[in-house]
Length: 487
Image 1 (spheres, one colour):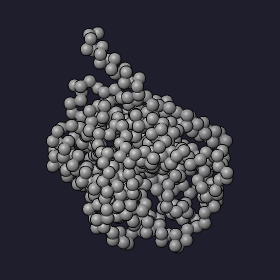
Image 2 (tube, one colour):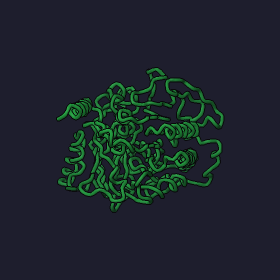
Image 3 (cartoon, helix red, strand yellow):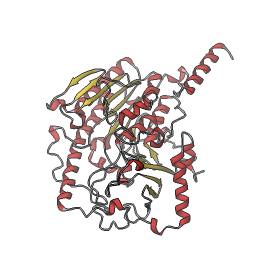
């Protein structure tokens, strides 16, 4: 082996040992694509029907993943999974705030040293974060703090959720925004994103743009120009809305009375407000695509649109929220447009938020660290989809702010900690209380009939064993646990 090849091999082995992704040889990096991730907050899969720009620009001209899920329906755990490609039981950011979660926990665990941002930056990408980072940022850290891996940083250090009257950390400089229409955060992010695209078009450097809106998270403040939109729209009424009989549900659901007329009215108004806040996001998507086209970069840019978790609005008698294993909370949109992506395709394969980081790495031509649990979806973006084994099941997890042994009592309506097994047509959930849920989605897509009480011991034992294997999986072992039965 000559000296040059020996040196390259040593560098690759060092990076792998250090937990960093190995770059491909320089000759393979000449046509690296740009990647844009548009990450919304609390958006379920069904609400995208009210986003015509998204549907026209991504769904009609790209791929829709019809079975895309989050493994934990809560902001910070899910965002940590997106940044690291890991199940929550592996990255251990369990909740939104310390001691079990939030930005401070993510940082204290050393996770910022190896994220999709550090991988892509090491591969020569301009890495840019705009909008929401992790819940609790910057907390007790300096408000000008910029995490490793991000070449450019535009994230609120105060007041982000209101979308007005916030302070933005812009590359270590604090900038105050007020209440003028032009201060509306989604519009500010759209302008900054367009600037990044133009600069990248001029210097030719590939970029990774992580664009995280606060919409449609409460209070879901809309842009003033959209304040009166959707005046006659009401929240969807699936069969599970204000469910008539919840006697087969776990205790935390049984404790809930049927929704009152006043509660239904509140749900309808919140639904309208959420949709209004999404209109600026919809406009932003179209504006970004226009800028990509004008700068000659559209044909080498992948655009991903998704959410950190879903959201329920009246299903199973639940007031607006998340954190459950019900479909409304874990099923989120994923739409992708980019070079070579077939227009109008719908992919039915089970795909997860933990797959995003390895997908971005694959598109950039780099390998992921061994700790990554997810897998690349890049193969599904081609005209000919991949063959062979693929995910048949995945774990759904929920953790509370304190572990059970640290709580004085469990509030009757609080969602207990749980672990769930989601297969293509089956959902099985084990609660810390010992309660079980089992739904056959082929015959009961709205999860009205809990079959756990009548299921055989043998079936429950098999499902429990498979769930246990998923809860214990690490790295590439997760692929085997998820694929069991497909080989």
